[in-house]
Structure formats: C-alpha cells, structure tokens
Image (cartoon, rainbow, N blue to C red; front, side, top):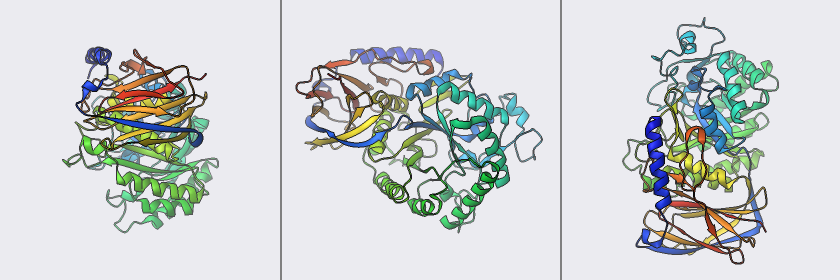
Amino acid sequence: MNRRDFVRVSAAATAAALCHQPTFADSQRSAAVRLNLRADRLGNKIADDFTGLSYESAALGNPDFFSGDNTELAGFLKRLAPSGVLRLGGNTSEYCYWAPDPAKPAKRPDVESLRTGDKANPIAFGLAGPDAGSQAPASVGITPRAIRNLRGFLDTCGWKLIYGLNMGTGTAQDAADEAADVMDVLGAKLMAFQLCNEPDLFFRNGLRKADYDVGQFVAEWQGFREAIRRRVPKAIFAGPDTAYNNEWLLPFARHCKDHVAFLTHHYYAEGPPTDPSMTIARLLSPNPKLQGALARMKQASDECGLPFRLAETNSCYQGGKPGVSDTFAGALWSADLMYQLASEGVAGINLHGGGYGWYSPIAGTRENGFLARPEYYGMLLFAEGGSGQLIESRLQQLEGVPLLTAYALRSDAGAIHVVAFNKNMDRVVRLTVDGAQPAPRATALRLLAPRVDDTTDTTVGGAPVGASGAWSPVREETLSPENGIVTIELPAASAALIRFERQ
C-alpha cells in the first residue's frame, strides 16, 4: 500500500469508527457477564520494557535501515513504548557475518554493494522481512557502519536491544570480534547478546547432524560465550532462544543460569500457513501449546531464579498466513497474548516482523514508507493500558461466550485500568465491571474493525495510526461508575480499555 492509498483508507476507517455505535443490534445474540476485581490482591508487574519487536538480523545488511534518520520507523516504535526492546535475530542471524572491511571471503556478500544501496539486492533495498524457513537464506555482511547507525536508531526511539550472533554457521572468533564492536558502540543500549536462533531446529535446517541434542548445544554455547567474554569481559547474555522444544529449556537453564541475565523462547500460535486448518477461529481460541510452553517457562524461571522473555512470537510461522495474520483477528490476538503473558509472569514479548511479512506489525520499507498493520493496533491498545501492577480479576457467567477474556491493573499513577477482549465472533457481551475503586468518571477506548477478517480499517479510539506512528483518539466514551461499578457493551470481535479516574 502506498501513501496515497494509506491516507484514503485511514479516512474511511475514521468515518466508519465515528458512525459505529456499539449496541445489541450488532448481533442477534448477547450475553451478560460480570468481572469481579480485587484491587487489594496484586499480581505481576508490567514493566516499561515489556513491549518489544523482533526483526531479522539481515535487516542490518542495509546500514541505512536501522539508523537515526529513519525517524518514520522510530516513530512507530516510540508510539508503542517509550523504552521498549528491539530484538535482532531470526533465521537469517545464522547467515550473517561480521564484515569489518569489504575484503572478505567470496562466500560472504559484497559489502560495498550493500553500502551503496544496490536496488538489485533485496536486503540493500530494505526488504528484509521474516524468513519463511523454506531454504537457507543468502549470506549477509554486517559492517561497523551498520552498528553505528543502529546506535543512532536506538537513541532516536529510546529502545534497548537484544543482539543475535551467528553460532549456526559462524565461528566463535568472528562472534567475539562482532560482539566487541557492538558492545563498544551500543554500550548501555545493549540488553544482551543471543548466541543463536532456534538451536533445537539446527538439525532440521541442515546446520548440525541429526543427533544434535541439548547436551551438545549447551557445550557449544558455553564455548562461544567463553570466547566472547575473553574479548568482551562485561558481555551479557540471554538464551537459549529455542523454537518449540520445551525439553531444552530446563537443561539449558540449569547449566547456564550463572551465565545468562534472562531466559528466552519462541512461540507461534499456528503453522504452517499451507495448512487449511490454520484459521482465524483457531487463532482466537485457547491454545494448549501455549499453556504447555508457559508451564515449562515458569518452571525453568522459578527453579533457576531467572526472568523469562518471549523473544520471538507471532500468529503463524513461516512469515504468516494471508487472510489470518494480516487481519483484525491479529489485533485481538496480539493484545490478548501480551496481557496473558504478563499475567503469567513473563518479563516481555517481541513480536516478529519486518518488510511486508503477513504478520508484521509495521509493514513497509524506507523507500515506500511504513504503515501500521492490524497487529500494531493490538499493541497500541496495550500501550494505552500502560505499565503497572496486575490485580486479581475473575469473570463470571461465561456460558455461551467462552472466548471472552479480561485483565485489570493498577497503573503506575494509581488508577484502575481494565481491558476486555470479546473474541467471540457471533455474540455481543454486556460486561459489568464490579470492584473498581470509587471514581467520579471512567472512559472507554475501543479496538474495532468492520469485520474480524478486515485488513485495512482497524481503529483504536475511532482513529487510525498515521505516518511515523501518529495517533490520537477521536472518540473516548465517558462512563458513569456507581460505587466503582460500570457496564459496557462489547460488540462481537472487539476489545475495550476502561480507565477509572482517581478521586
């Protein structure tokens, strides 16, 4: 979508949102549900750096992509969080090589062509999107200039960085050389190094033999870490950055707990995209795979005393599925997932994207400009909910609306915020929130789209997101609490953030 089309769609979305008044007429079926809050029972903390995005390391092949003058992309990040976390890794990180000067072996890319922005090269053109994993990515050189520009980008958006190194096809010496430059340039902006991407899939990707197991991985990981620490004594690490194999998490944590600042894992709700059963309905339903992963994450975190971060996640692996990943369903899914993870004690999340990947929260290139996809709007709703301390909340009378979820928190300013997701696609919900602090006034900010499969007309507060993440709500509904109780109608496939003002 070009800028002219984006302006046209944004205007249409705003008009549609202003005309839409959610009522029971939106559906022939409805349900009344009660949400009971216990503001005195505190849960997990949502920190300022909970929100994050993940990009392929290959994006650094174009030194001008992550740079201080890419203010448009930086603006989108700042809108989501004042101090979020950017993670660079993905499948391509195992094919990126440190290139301190253009004179490198032939198997590595022509760094000079990358430096001059050769449009024949998709990486140089800034099109590095999520790797589909169908074949080995092309080799990409990362130069000192790319790292200097990356520092400028982080300064512009105010975010920190998780930086992926190449253990898959690289050497420990090259990783140490790269880490030294990254550490020197990024300084406090560097949150941690990751030494690889999805090592539990190394044998499937042809990077290791079929008998490669967690024991061999841990030994190799420790060897790389020691080589880097000899060169960079203050280097901080995270791992194991596994794809799906929960059986690798605990052994890694037990062996390496003294050498990592936090644990990392990946999660994709669906896949592969060629499977016809990977649908919107499935995306919005509870996922047993996530429950299993969360249980193992919590076990490893509790036993080893380490925070846990979901360093790469999205709706459907292999770059996403059109008609599912790029729809309004992705907005509902992403925001609900963020609150679910926070309630389970996960320290943060990095939603994967880049280029024109179907699930990318921010789509586009520097040449064509960037725009917010539906998933970005879910992250925006989470941003509007803000950081704070989760409080106990319990839904009652869920018969007939099993896909309703809700969360509550006490904001850093002391106000009660409630966010509710009606992921049921055929029922309106009349939600009564009971137990909030007495407040003279409450407001509601809605996450809406004309249809759950809509790809272009998502709004938050009746407004679309514009260039550089520009956004301001055009409709914030006023509610009148009585003794801390309010009632709000949630159309099918929608969400709302309710904020109770302080006395």
